[in-house]
Length: 612
Image (cartoon, rainbow, N blue to C red; front, side, top):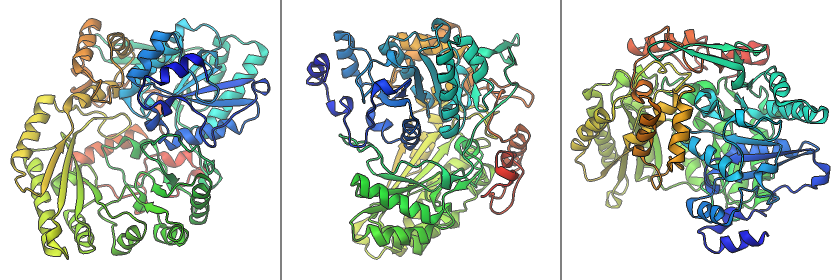
């Protein structure tokens, strides 16, 4: 271990975050490697190591001969201060080498509030922030992840954006990079060729113009770049890489367990949900393969917990037999089986019994999202009040005494009546418990949580404006005053971070200057209350002459050109607009298994057929 690092670690909390050396971490002989990839997660070790996508791509890249992928996480404030004081640059965990020595620096971005951490990590590494200030081929800075479906706020900082699922496109990009490095290409030559790889967006090859009132007028491709860049997907999940031999952390992380990915995509089409659209179409793993992978991963890692995960796990068609197969092994080996992402319309007694056998008995979580059936239909939630009450009835009769209910405030078409419907629904859940619990003396805990709706790109609500912070807080007060039952706890998400998230999620390239200005005045770890300061951001908006409400609160018209107009997730804009019209008409769209609604994502599948 580096002497400076050893000295620093004695002075920081959770030093296990920064030392590496974990079981199954990949070590390679540097003399056999011609491409080194620093895989950066712009949050703490505990959060990053819980990200299954990062574990998958780490394994994919390290299976390539001549390529070594290493992990880099954002140091917490105490560690960063020590590193800057001692002149220790940001380093990778596997080798301890400075990130600036790597060929490619890649960021995984699932949340807009991590943008300032990207700049902070580049600065800690001694790497110029902006692409134009990095004229050489090395280091190349790339980014991928869900928040990159609108890459424009980070466009000036990154060289390449990888869209969609990275298993295949990352390999293709690295192979092209190795060729460019061998043959002595310039950075410009490489970027022009990289733009021809499906799924790679090169921001510098697109010119953005604006209308006099500040809207985007056009995004124009340059130098042979494609007019549209479409995401990449893995079509056959049974052949997709899964990290059976996964890194076992040396310190506790957020999701310290085996994470078994059932399928990608979602059949439901909730109109507010970006993930439900950008991960289309649905593609699942076979029951037999999942059972084998889950057991092998537990055997290799020693984990005593396994989570079956997806956007909506209870929609996996072979869920019950899969649980049976896993429990046959899990129970005698004392491995707990958990199933998050449950839906109120398909929670059954059979499923409840299996969850009890699997060791999960503390509480259940459902997300009705809205308090009235009218609003649930408008957002296409496809869950009725009776669905929720029946699920709670089943759970309470089976011995559960805790349930969490998640809602959003500020959804399009919402009225005060819809807000009050949340209180009414929570009270009905309480009475279901009273009438069905076998043991009233235990009491019940009903937790109602609300967050502020954030309009996202590539959804039917991408044209909507967000409620102002004042309006959101008015609705919070209205709901709080009508939740008087002592068995019901009400938690609400603060509107400040949601406001900034809305700005960043729908911003254009002019927001890049704001991000840098905010970072230079201390913004980092913006998703953490310990660090977040809206005032720092408001000062940055003012300094850059940018009105944040223009991005967060403004209603768009049908013809507006979005900053992400070049980016395609396979779902057509025509379909999204039709879904918005359905929302205002209060009409639901059936799920993908019931009826295909022609969203366009089938074009990404082999043979043009979705396997919902």
